[in-house]
Image 1 (spheres, protein in one colour):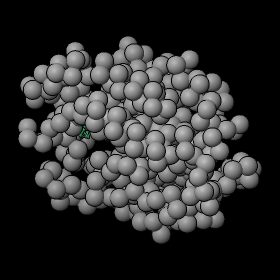
Image 2 (tube, protein in one colour):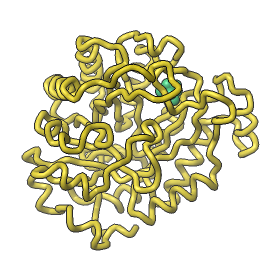
Image 3 (tube, protein in one colour):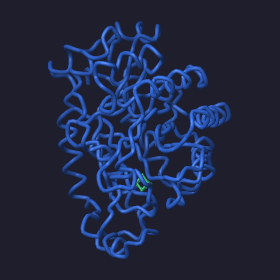
Length: 356
Ligand code: SF4
């Protein structure tokens, strides 16, 4: 992996950072490639600009498409392959989807996803899959080919924005997160702020995540993600949450969640000059940024570059992590399948190795 070129070095700290991170003055991010496997989804969330809303817009990426993205990302030094897709696309009202899968040689999305994860591993990338709600068996099927997995809780409240989305029932999402814990999968979850919930709902959502982490110890980070209105969606005229509300959410999250659970604030969804305010309130992760693909959930919001991030977070120090957090690297929460790759990509403290 071309991780040792001089363009990576100027804004980074290596050994020095380890000490600073202990003092919580370090902020982490991951270098990823965002792979939107399919935009076919059985749900119909009122704020969603990702899901195909008409048949002409629907797609399913082929293995050749995915391979091209993986190889480009690898050349640019990314290590995380983030697979995102609509939930249970076979159950959508879009009949051609199953024939597309068949044409690719697969009977189910899950089988296809597993094959894509294997492709990523073959390209020396660590997969992180976010496929919506999955059963215990489905999670187990994907576990050994994923370094970590994710599912946004979004909110524990029943909001109008989810009335046409069977997969957004809070109890179903909590079950998937719990099942991931039973399987010892390092897990990312989060809340979506501004979709009709109250502040008490935000607190209740964070407390529910905390309870699951206390039971299973598998939550690595909680994303505080702001809703952003999208054209051609039912919520296109709604206002996004204010920076002040997001800051309150970060503050309360830091108070509720155990210290080992990081709070992530997406750096392309808050004004860069205000990023540091979130760090001062306890956010300590900036999620994945990609040089190869867009944020397909918020395509209007470009990722900042590593250099821009390093400047925006000063005096905090920017440090790259893998899709699984350092403590899960150190605890060995990864499969035999991924063992060599995790070891190759991580340093002694479990962060991304920059001198490979
Ligand atoms: S937000 Fe996710 S679950 Fe909801 S419609 Fe969009 S892709 Fe589907």
